[in-house]
Length: 88
Image (cartoon, rainbow, N blue to C red; front, side, top):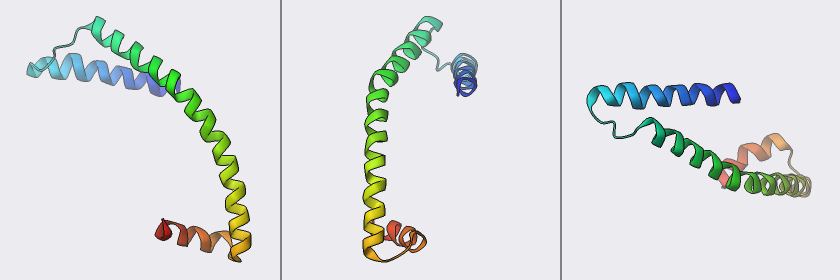
């Protein structure tokens, strides 16, 4: 995960400071780039952790409800997973 982030930042740096600079579209300095990354990562942590926590709790509840629904409907998981995308 960390290696993917480093690779992504490296490609972002290349894209912004080499390719866009070559064609004259770059309006961003290195300070603004780093400030933007810091703000976006901070927002991702602040908003992402509660959402991830709530999603984890809800997915456990949904899995239990899905098990109950499948058992009550009388079909197995294979048939249910084939029907589910069409149903939604």
